[in-house]
Length: 342
Image (cartoon, rainbow, N blue to C red; front, side, top):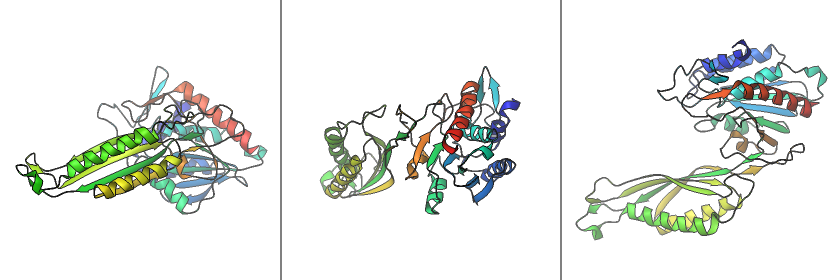
């Protein structure tokens, strides 16, 4: 296990909802300072650099999701049959550990360009950490690598996202005389029926072949309405998310939701709006994209690559990665550092 000491140390920190953010940030900072890195920025985020004119950056989030009770010893890295088990081993302390292992092997005196390492917080819920960096006008290097789990494949893009919360206000009445009321639930149903018809005719048919699921998807996540079965409901709330395959779909969807909101007297709030991206990387010919969201979407104007460990067991009981994948990732990171910063 000595070979995987960094990952073992990182897994020990309980960073669910950033509980031990300070401790993990200080561990990483101390480790990198010993390698000659200097601290550029430190809050709950950490930015460290080495060399001049950084051309490459790595980014990893330190927080994890909560674990399920069946997860045995979530904060203890366990090696069994070639697999490393532990909360965050895959998402994404494995990626962070591989970054730290990789930079320790680099002779930076032989590189013309420097590099930066970014460690963010609150990725699993609101992306607060990366938004903080963007808000503070952080100058990101030309190339950025995000250590999310990809099973050692390089992804150069992923879908965007629109998340809606939509509120319908009706008029309560007894169900024996529903004409005296206005059903918020029925308005929500009519709204969804029309939106679904629009989606199937205007959005889903417009495919983007670069993605495994080659079209924008629509999902009605929650519906909450009414207070009793014998009352006309005065209130209904729904949540919808669209995983956007084509940027032009954003305008079409938002325009339609606005139109239907006026028709059914609803209030539609956009909770998250993130554009899709596919970047052209000069040394990558085989374009592959991720089905999941990453912090890469929040950083524009750079060439983005998503590359991390496998198998992809993020958010699963007994989250794990293979030692083979981890070892390969360290070498992949080393090669990319020399390729980009030479």
